[in-house]
Length: 119
Image 1 (cartoon, helix red, strand yellow):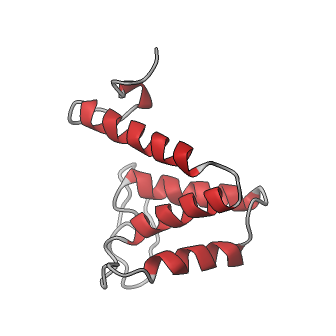
Image 2: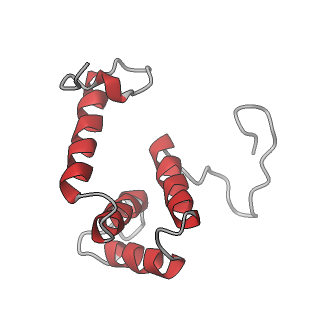
């Protein structure tokens, strides 16, 4: 498999697709690693948070919603540790959603595109 920039990517045998289907998934992964590296939570705390999310009723058996659970686990962990208030997390998610809807197709989604953003 070749990456878009032409650099060959060595994937494990049997893996023929990117790990992340969307850029936000890679960003959520990277944020989790960065927050762990800063010592804000342990890997066991992370594993417990993610495990609790994927075991919730309604989780897709084939895992297509895995990174949605990943993001929910990260948001929950940040809130439970007092690193971000749930209301702030929800407000930011809503702002990104509004920005996505206000962004023309094919253009990068920027938080500044949120129609409610203060300028």
